[in-house]
Image (cartoon, rainbow over all chains, first blue to last red; front, side):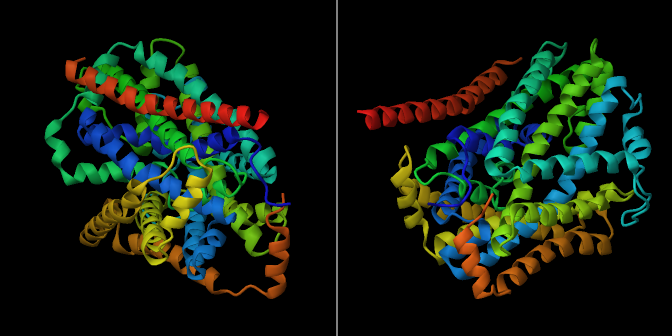
Length: 503
Length: 40
């Protein structure tokens, strides 16, 4: 009898995996990326990237976790003992992402409350950087703690750790079964309202109008692969960990198709909602949609409050829906990110779940206080950029090369997936992972390194980018190597194997 | 909205949401078939 915890149902796993993939980036990154890279024409490279990299990588990670039934270091270590370092590296990346991701959810939580009386006033930019974040004058200046960020940050961590303490079935699965459908309902109400606003058609026209000239640009194809890669929670241990909790006979391939299409389906919905609202804003200001388009923190916390101010009625209600959606989308992703290192620590050090949640999650919560300081936004901006581009993407590239070319494990994973899945994998899957994905990710990496060696990201000073950008990305690699090299005692291995991961 | 934008919107919706619906339907049908086989 296997002791490893399992999802209560197939739907529970799919909701958790989709909840992990659907995050803040779906709402504030995809619409802007699509618009800047050809509008409607972007759908072709985007769909091509989904089918040739996104879903094949999801299937690979599901198969690795399901076959080896351990978190990322354990699962990759069973393919080749040396690969456990890649797994530890991915866990270190997850740890780093969790500490700043929680801070953004905390901002959204605060803004959900602010929206009830439109506390941001008319100067939404001044409110965000001055009144709310109390941003330091220069990057690298830590300053003091900002209570308005710290309090919701503590709430976010308490919620996340409470859910994780509940375990896979009673914690993560139940939370996703509540939060993901709620997110969908809240967001649908928001999109329906957005579609009925004046100017929505102009916004949608700007979003979907194809610019065919751009489809031949390599930059557009790299952007499409980047969007798919960063939004599917692949390359940083989440899907390996989640699939290790599937029952032995559970499907893999069809689950990957559902997760991939659910993530893209939500991105499309977000694009429709965001551009309908931007069309309304452009009409109110008497400018073109191109003048109000943006993405990231600026779109969510500066532009959206402006739009909420201009809504004809129920401003506070729709503001609450928008920021509530951000909180839900963020929480389902945060839980999955933290679960990777909670499960990894539990297996590696043979801890109880309570201990690993308290130590692993508690440590992440303490480190994330850095992002509740006056200088938090600067740290967040640089760490996010470097850990994504030189952490997630690089670890994903190394993982696929290691599995496909060094261990030549694709055939075994294909056989494993085909044995239990409804959709059978053919040669296309191996071509996608063995050739297309490494080439595209390798090119992305080369391009990123070239760009960042030439210019400092965001115009920051060299010391700041070196320490908090390159330094943090390098620290994740070093941590991975250190954890992989630290030998486990025979007693520890024996106890861990006997116990697997207890609830 | 211009015709080309409407066309691209429809293509996007049909492929992405249609792909999601088809994957879910496939999962439900196959699991029902497996349930029927194991009962018989």
